[in-house]
Length: 258
Image (cartoon, rainbow, N blue to C red; front, side, top):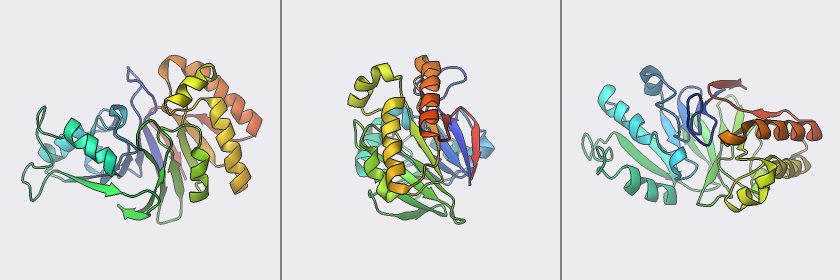
């Protein structure tokens, strides 16, 4: 399994893209930076998109990716998410008022975009992977995803989340954990209230993981608050030292092989 981080940041600027992961070139988790990161040939290989929640920085490229599929190679894209996520994404991004309604184009019988609802803690097979959506603690309905390949390699992406994600740990057994740190410890209370983590809060969640599972996987941090990146980097490094664990910041086009 190869995981490519298309976007590792909370805000977009030159060299920093919004949150999005690509697994083995064919499965995308979150749509913050798909078309801005991939060539048309790379986009054409995508078989499915998973959304953790409806916030714009995780869904933006749904429209541009589907437009490319519809017009450039006449393909069909399937997006999987919680029903509440789809119920917001559909009227806000896909209603046809600002752009083509790809749920109806080129025809209602064979649209360029299909939406499929997932159920928390209900394992499904998508694009050849076993997928387990696990509820996440955020400001809106959200899930994280455990992705298991045919060879048994396993990734878990928490998505945007806050304290209490340790409730997810009983459901998963990843070799790689990708999670978030939105800002520095000095704003920890504020971030927790808005459904996000700082390094100190993440440390406590990881301690609970190790207490329950007896190990810690490699941990990559994304959804990095751009103005605080150096501070976050230093605080995450301190957590890695304290836990004697492999924890580091992700970056655009980083590739991890399991």
